[in-house]
Amino acid sequence: MTYAIGLTGGIGSGKTTVANLFATHGITIIDTDAIAHGITAPGGAAMPAIRREFGDAFVAPDGSLDRARMREAVFTDDAAKARLEAITHPLIRTECERAAAEAEGPYLIFVVPLLVESGTWKTRVQRVLVVDCTEETQIARVMSRNRFTREQVQAIMARQASRAQRLAAADDVIDNDVHDAPLAPQVDRLHAAYLQLVRQTGGE
Ligand code: ATP
Image 1 (cartoon, rainbow, N blue to C red):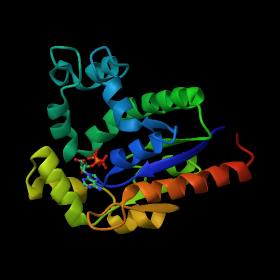
Image 2: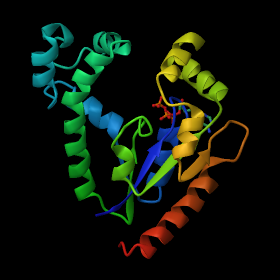
Image 3: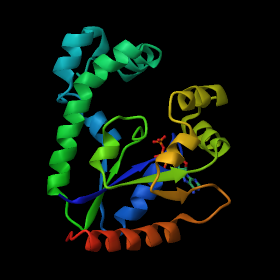
C-alpha cells in the first residue's frame, strides 16, 4: 500500500494552496472535495440514489445535485446529513481507492477537509498533516474569497472541529498565517521528511 498523508485544515486555512506545493514535487493529490463534486455532477455516480432518497426537487435540470438546496437541507438537520453521507461516503471511498491504486510517486496526499471530524479517515492514512492559521485569518480569507459575511463564515466554522481539536490530531503542522513562515520552505522540509519515512517503512 502506498504511504498516505491526510491533509486537513479548517475552511480557508490553505489546504489547496499547500496541496499545490506538494504537487510541484510530483506528489499525487487526491482531493475528496473534488471527488464529492464529481459524483454529484450531471451523470455522477451518486445522483440516482440522491434522486431516490431525497426526490426530484434536489436534482437540478442538468441532472446535477442542487447544491444550494441540499446545503440548506443538511445544514441543521443531522439526520438528512447522515442520509446524504450514507450515499456519498462509500462512493468517495471507492473513488479514492481507485485513484490511490493508480497514483505514482513515493507517497500520496489525500486532501480531506473533515478528516478530524470523520471516524475513519485517521485510520486510513499514515500521517495527519494540518494546515493551521488563526480563526481570524480563516474568517478574513473566506469573507474575501466567497463574499460571505463574518457571521456566515463563523456559522460554517462552528460546525467544523476547533483549531485545538485539529492540532491535537496532527502529526505535522504547516503554519499558514499571513505574517508567519512562508509556505514553500515548510513544504520542502516536510516533503524531505516524508521521503525519509517512506524509505524507513520500506516503501518505494
Ligand atoms: P476551503 O476549505 O475553503 O476549500 P482551503 O483550505 O483549500 O479552503 P485555500 O483555497 O488554499 O484554502 O485558501 C483559501 C483562500 O486564501 C484562497 O483564496 C487562497 O488564495 C488564500 N490563501 C491561502 N493561503 C494564503 C497565503 N499564505 N497568503 C495569502 N493568501 C492565501
